[in-house]
Amino acid sequence: MRTALTIAGSDCSGGAGVQADLKTMSAHGVFGMSVIVAVVAENTARVISIQDMPSQIICDQMTAVFEDIKVDAVKIGMLSSPECINSVYKKLLEYKPQNIVVDPVMYAKNGSPLMPEESIKVLLETIVPLATVITPNIPEAECIAKMSISSRQDMMTACKKIYSTGVKNVLVKGGHYDGEAMDILFDGKQFYTFVTERINTKNTHGTGCTLSSSIASNLALGHNVYESVKLAKEYVTGAIKHSLEIGKGNGPTNHFWKIFE
Image 1 (cartoon, rainbow, N blue to C red):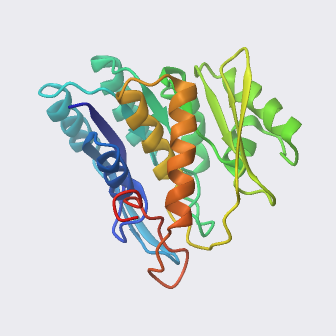
Image 2: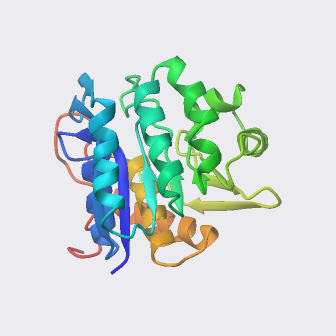
Image 3: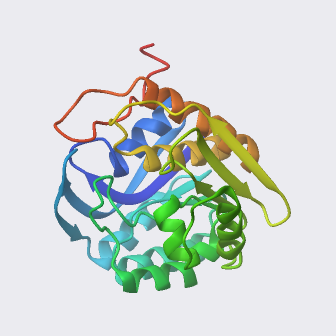
């Protein structure tokens, strides 16, 4: 059985973070494992508090997984402090996993900041150059590329700027725009555009986590980056279409929509 490891924060409400990643991996028939770097007290409406895990326990969790189990893909989500980032970076250098997907989680769905400014620079200098693909949304891409994005051409320019950080592939997600949901993938040579219908729902909590862990799952299953992104887009679109009316804010997507369809 193929395996995937999520390195991310825990969402106690179950719609995002490690919980969403493990559900997504299971839905793809991949054995999911987790390294929790932070415990986030959040729900569908707000983030209450964040507690980072000590560096030693982050390193020990990664050691526990890698010394025992072959890891076919890694998804990296929220790393809120330089200490967290450096701990993960140290272990990635030690174990050299393939197929690393980085979701640079900077904001919660309700706009609450999850990554301090000082952490972004450290992330770009350490983990991002090791990544197979990075998956920023529009606000995150604007932050990383240091530019405003208001058009498809802007998205392509941002892709090039983010690619210069050393990452192998950049996927800029256009979900924050009106109209069709358009994402752009850049592999350093060619642009690929993925367009799907926009679904009229507020229940999109955890979509970024779900997409990135779906890409990681598909990479673990042996698909190339283009195929993995294409399949992940189709999966997330279905999960949003069948999203769940849970909570008072932005409800979660339905990770098992194919099973309970």
